[in-house]
Image 1 (cartoon, one colour):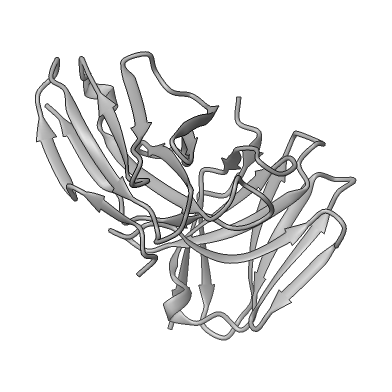
Image 2: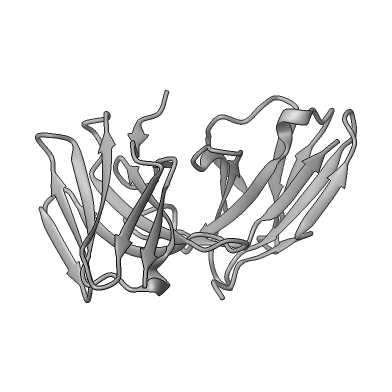
Length: 112
Length: 114
């Protein structure tokens, strides 16, 4: 049972435009959410996180939005750059000391 | 470089065989997590160890087992291998017992079962 879902396997965006990656979850106990970026032949690397007490967290060009009522989070990248082309995974956990659940990933291609 | 190392990088073996994947966490990290990523699948959590003890279990098959040693490195043992076990296996580490913090992933071991 996939508790974290990324329904778009791929996304293409022009350089300079906004990239919006979406993630939905089913477990209302999740209270910590993360985005990871993965390049080919490398492990995922942490990008940005948000806890359930917030609805937005910003770090440079990356902003994560959390809509708890809709059980939805999104990652905005503005402006998108070709180096952002990678697979993006969202992940969630419920409380401390618990396992992380990952989505299936969205492959982002930023076209120069 | 995340500081997490995994060996080997690639492994090719036959069905029915047994393999061992190794992970060294970041210096000082006590928790190690193992994940499997099959084709078109997300990262499936397998198992977590904290300071040598099993902490949480996910979708780990009975044919698979893991342990964490006193020096905190971990090994994932896969036995009676099947074609469907072909996947990328990642380990990740975190400093404490899993409080609100990120995991740092190794580069993965790509396993191909023929």
